[in-house]
Structure formats: C-alpha cells, structure tokens
Image 1 (cartoon, rainbow, N blue to C red):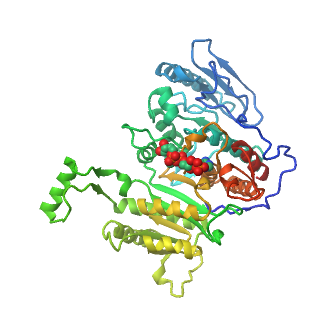
Image 2 (image 1 turned 30 degrees about the vertical axis):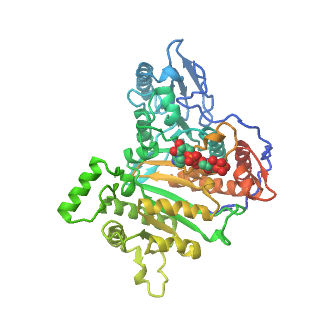
Image 3 (image 1 turned 90 degrees about the vertical axis):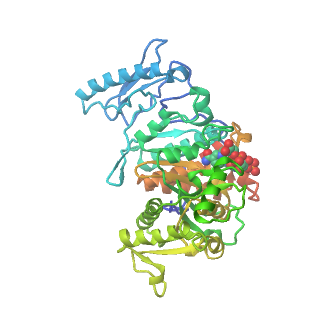
Length: 529
Ligand code: NAP
C-alpha cells in the first residue's frame, strides 16, 4: 500500500547477480526453509538445513513407520517437529509429534537462552516451525526478525505463482536486511489440495494455524461446486472476522492501460468485508422463505413487492461500518494520505448506505476529531497540515470521478458491494487485475491474497503472472512494518516491467515486450530489487 514505483532507488540492477531475467528455467525449485507440511517430499521428510544466521543444529527422524522428525537449532533460533505428508497429518501422528515437541520444549526451556522452541499448538504438527510468532499488542503488530508466516499455496496456477512469489520474498528480505531477517514459511492446507489430502476444503487446523500466527498469505482457491462451503474465501474472512478488504490500486510504468494518464490514479480502497451482500441472506424466487418474507413485509409494513420475487437482505450495522471507516482513517493518517472518501448510495438506500455515510462522519468526528476535517468545513479546499479530509460521494458519481479526476481521491471507504465494483473498475484503469493485490484484515489478523482466480487452464505451465500475489506480499510486509522490503518488491516489479520482460498477459499488450515464464519473471523482479 502506498508503494511508489522506483521508491528508494533508481531500479539499478545488482551487478553481482548473475541470473539474467528471462533465462530461468520453468519450475525452478523454491528455496527457503522447509515447510511443516510439505507434500513434495516423500517420507521421511528432508528438513531444510537452512537456519537463521550462523548456527549449529541437527535433525533426528524416528525410524519408520513413525511419522515425525525433530529438528533443532542452537544459537539463534528454535526447533520444530515436522511431519511428512499424507498419513502424517493424521491425528495419531499429530498427537505423537506434539507429545515429543512438548517434551523437547520442556528440556529446551531449561537451557535457554541458548536454545529456544517455537510454541507447539495442542494436537497439531503443522503449526510447529522455526522462527517466532507475530504478536498483536495494543493495536500494533509485534514482529520478530524471523517471523513464522503460514501460506496457502492455492489451486490451479496457485503453486506456480506461489513458488515465484516466495523466491521474490525470500531474496528481497535477505537482500534488504543483509541476511538479518528471514521468513519461516509454514504451509497450511485449503482448497482442492486440502480436500485431496484430508477430505476437508478448509480444515480446522488451517484456521488454527492462522489464528495462532495471525498473518497469512494465500494463492487463489477453487470454489467448491455443488454444496458445502459457499466460498472458501468468504468463509476465511467470516471465521477470522477479517472485516476490511484492502485493495491498493496504482499504476506501474509500462503496463498497458486504457487511460491517457493512468499514473494519476493512486488509491487504497477499504471495502467492508462481512456485511451487506456478503452476509449471504438471499432466498430463491417462489421458495417458502422468500414467500414468507414477502408475506411478512406486505402484511406488517404495507410493502409493495411483486409476488414470486427473489429476496436478498442487506444488513449494514453502525458497528461494522464504523470499524471499517476507522481502519481507513488510521491508514490514511499513518501513510500521510490526504483524504478518505466514503462511497455510498445513500440517496436511494437511506438507512443502509445512508447510514454508512452518517456513521462514517460520526466516527471521524468522535475518534479522530483533531486529525480529520469534513470536506464541507475546508473552505478553500485546502487542509491543515496533518489532517485528513473526510469526503463522501454517491457511488455512481464516484465511478465517473475516478475516471475524470482520479488525483482527487486517495483512500476510499465503501460498503461491501460498492467497494467490490469500484476495486475492479479502478484496477482496470491501471492495466487490469493481473497486478492487483489484496488483503483481508481484522483486528490482529490478516490474510493477504492474490485477487484473481485459479486460472486452471494454465495450471502447471509456469506461465501466468505472479504479480498479484507478489504485490500482496509487499502489502503484507508494509502492514508488518517492513516498509523497506515492501518498497524493494515494488521497485523490483516496476524494474521488470520497464525491462519489458513480462508474462504472457502483459506481453500480448506491450508491443516489443519479451514473454517470459512465471519463474523467469520472478528472477527478473529479483534482479531489479
Ligand atoms: P480466473 O481464475 O481469475 O481466470 C480468468 C482469466 O483471467 C484467465 O483465463 C486469464 O485470462 C486471467 N488470469 C487470471 N489469473 C491470471 C494471472 N495470474 N496471470 C495472467 N492472467 C490471469 O477466473 P475464473 O476462471 O472465473 O475462476 C477460476 C476459479 O477461481 C473458480 O473456481 C473461482 O471460483 C476461483 N476464484 C478464486 C478467487 C480467489 O481465490 N480469490 C477469485 C476469483 C475466482 P486469459 O485466459 O484471457 O489470459
């Protein structure tokens, strides 16, 4: 969020890096620490020998058929119990691994500070990892230098883009911190991969791991067809109460855009993520529920509804609206952004959308009164230094404004449906969804995600654009206070696009550009970090 292309440097190439972007081979192996659930390994697991900084340690695997290993590191870090894929995820293996880990933990605690363990989660193996947990205290993230971050690889092209993204994240963190910081990636299952392995599209263990580690990143997930969970993404958001969907939209020089001056658009959209149409209260036309609701509204309130109509209910609360607007204002203040615009259709839906507008102004006045000013009170339109102007616009007018005068808008706060429509329209103005990142954020929990789908027809071809998940990672690092990493990733991506070595989706729109694979594009980004 708020990342500027070329920020913090001129996009200079690192001459010591001998990999030329475009030269990388398809499906290059990923580097980095091993994952706690790593389905690419065969039993027993091979645990990565990479450690945090200079340290000594070892790995001990129980003889087969036991399904766990213990890895330990002295000096700087921790130890973990790792289970191999498949049956290892069973309750039995989990319980045995957990028993061992608790025993090791007890021993380890007696020899601190030489030796430290990641805290195990009861009954779980896949939340044990090297590194330390991210904490959330007094409304702030507390981020260790070696945080554990769970990831969901995603379905379809998810593994392709995740592999590329992880290379970019690891290389950037290493370079920017001189090797002092490192992410301990922890794979958690969701989607088709979870269904195949454990028979559940969204295992409770995955939700537990995200609850434990607080911040996660995910690739796209297939929406199960025919019953069960309506949408995994919606379920994740609701279960973890990730009430703000945050979508920064900005232009990268060189990306083909339908606009004459796409660089003028630089907005961060905060969209309410739980209520409104996402509350999912909808009844089929002619069904008993719809008929009952129609009957009730007609008899009780004299409402005029055509018989046989389908019914959708759109609840919007003061609580839900205000916490979203507050988050947008907090961000604007933190990022030095000049305004927050409330987008609503309050001229027609006076109590829901109109309520959003009214409650938005109210929370701005009550909680941020000394740091915000309503647009109507700004007189000549200028603001006092350090204050954020609170504006509001009716939804249809907002679409026109973003096209005609995008530079007048900075942060947007919107109810669910308005925000959904606006985010995609804005992304199209700067060159499409392929590069649009997103985050679902609550209080003390955040899941960052690629905004496109699984693009299944390209799965396993090392072909699609990893830009969306890479920029989502940049958002994640910025949220965690690693602004230097976020800026470097944006710089690297901007550099790769300026070098005109891009994936097929951009190459077909950029005359003279060279099409490169997903993994080669990642290498190109790394060269420009
Ligand atoms: P989609 O996967 O987004 O793919 C539609 C088209 O968008 C692709 O055919 C491709 O266009 C382009 N595209 C998508 N990702 C791209 C990338 N990384 N790089 C370049 N081009 C990309 O949408 P869908 O086919 O409607 O949905 C497929 C599955 O994804 C469904 O199960 C859906 O429910 C799910 N989905 C998940 C999420 C999520 O997890 N957040 C979001 C949306 C959809 P061209 O073929 O024209 O090149």
